[in-house]
Image (cartoon, rainbow, N blue to C red; front, top):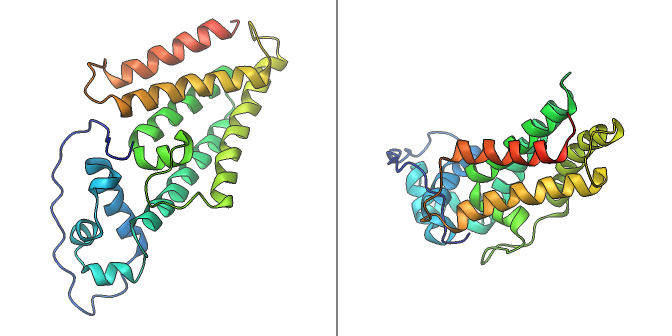
Length: 216
């Protein structure tokens, strides 16, 4: 994904005015939010510390006080955004809804998460580390595994009710995940292809997968 960025609306963000000395402690969250906007708009390789600092409204020197380089920024974005996916999966899993509905909601959230956080998605799920970025920390990899385990447990409910047309809970969960991963990856890697509306692609993907795999 490196230089590839998702086709998003090209909204120009007004750069913050340079923060005056003594304005207070610069929150790390502010840097992370600005960096992710630039990563999405320009790709990881197109982003620079200076661009991120300008977006926040501080000097590059001030930004280096919080992060060693942009690779460190991306790693923290990965952990933060992956935790959002984890919390969303956990919330959906606990809803008093039919298991198929919950699986559909989880897969929908997963694909939208990948589209909204393309650089973090590549680093976590595409297996192609971006240049100059260290491997994911063990706790972040564990968080990714926990996201999958929550999802698989709900698919297991479907299997336990005898509603799978084919496969086991594990193979069904992995197949559903792999197919949705393909959607996210292709949209990111081929931004100039004449893709249909994204919401429609997500809906058709989920309907096709679940209608074919699950017995009503």
